[in-house]
Every structure is written in C-alpha cells, then in structure tokens.
Amino acid sequence: MSANDHRDHGHHHAHATPGDRRYVIAMVLSLVIVAVETIGGFLANSTALVADAGHVLSDVLGLALAGGASWLAGRPAGGRRTYGFGKATVLAALTNGVVLMFVSGGIALEAINRLLKPEAVSSWVVIGAAAIGVVVNAATALMFARGRERDLNVRGVFLHMAADAGISLGVILAAGAILVTGWTWLDPVVSLAIVGVIVWGAWGLLREAADLALDAAPAGADLESIHQFLIGGDGVTEVHDLHLWAMSTTEMALTAHIVRPAHDGADAFRADLAEALEHRFGVRHATLQIEQARGAHCPVC
Image (cartoon, rainbow, N blue to C red; front, side):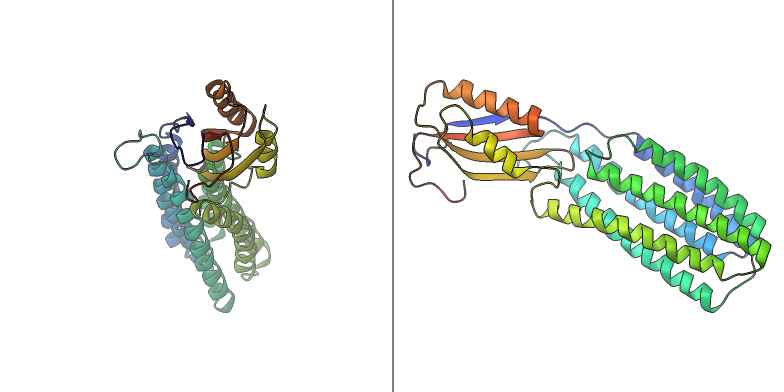
C-alpha cells in the first residue's frame, strides 16, 4: 500500500470525563472568602486584606473558566468539531496562567505602595479574617490535589488555591508580628515574598499551557520511547510522520506512518499497537497508517 492511500487507518478513541463539581464548590467557597476579607479589610483599615480579597475574586473567574472548560470537554464531538471541545481545557489553563501573573503584579504594586505609605491596622481583625481564608483555601486546594499530575487545568486550580492559602497565612504572620513589634513594613515585605512564590509556580503553568496551545508534545510524553516502541513492532522497518499533541489537558493524540512490508494481519497489528499506546504511554487517540513501502507521501498527512 502506498503512503498516499488514506483508507488504511487505525483509530482508537476515548472521551473526556464530564464536568467536575469541584469547580462549583470551589467557586462558592471562594466567594465566601471574598465577602469575609472585604468586610474585614474595611473594618480593620487593611489594604492588604482587601487586596487579598480581590485576588480571590480573580480566582473565581479562573475557576469559572476551568469548570466551564471541563464541562465543554465532556461534550461529544460532532459537526465541524471532530475532536470535540477538549482544547477548551488548554485555553482555560493558558488564561488562568495569564490571570495569575497579572494578579501577582497587582499584589506586588500594592505591597510596594504599603512600603512607601504604611498604615495602622487592626491586627486582630486581620488575623481572624485571614485565618478563615487559610482554612477554606487549604480545604479547597486539597479537593484538587487528586488528578493534578494528569490534568494541567486541575493543577492550575490547585496552584491558585494553595497560593491563596499561602497569601492568607502570610497576612496572619505579618499582622501578628506587627501586633508585637509595631513594624508595619513587615506586611508588604511578606506579601512580596509570597508573590515571588506564586510567580515561580505560575510561570511553569503558563509555559506548559502555551506549549499545549501550540500543539507541542505534552511535557510528560516521551517521544523517543514511543518512536522506539513503534519501530520495534513486528515486521516494522520504518516509522515516519510521527506527530504527538494534546487534545486537552488530559488527552493526547498521535498520528504515524508505519512501513511494514509484510502486510499480513494489518488490522490486528494496528489494533494491538493502538491499545498498547494507550496502556503504555497514555495516548488515547491514535491514528496509524500502515505502508508496504516508503514511497512518496503527502507532507500534511
């Protein structure tokens, strides 16, 4: 069979999981924190607490994007969207990374402003409101601890919630130290340190999401091992036009042309390869074209 004959394809499909209720629960809990910290910030004259509330409010947007993308990914493929809506999870992860970087910049500016113009605050009110933020954010982060290694979107939400808990804890520590020493500059210094930690984590998330949006191979994929596995197949003499990309933050797709002069049992051979690719490498959608000779082939196949 020539490389230009497209009828000899093998397909293996799997569908994304449906929308995750954790996003809705996390949004409700985050809105509770926004209300508590906003009221507490005005009562305590604490701009840091109000800024933290604004940060959490931005997370609600991120959760809405991630939850909406998770729901879209669960919709079946059809019409012009032959791959479904899985890519929405990649776009949501990319947006979350951008939002987190912008929010971090806003927190840094607020911290610098507080360094230049320190203000007295009611430390006990700050500690009480921030403590609620720590507990609720930590509990929300734990909800997203499961699955964060496999799903970039879940990892993004986990980072958001963990960062929020860290920020609230930093606010508590700063308020406690100010209560004891009267050093108001501690509040913005702690805030800047926390921003550094957030930016460090967000940069990795943003870079990986951008790679997936550009159809790069997912970071956890071992292209060389996949190529060696395919070339080691029974009767295979060559593998070319091997492409691997992300259909979503949890699913990978692969296409490859496999040269196999002995063309006996092609259907069974192709089905076994597709099944092995899923179980060994997590590739849930494999399109394999078997060829008897290399020959001229379509460069966009």
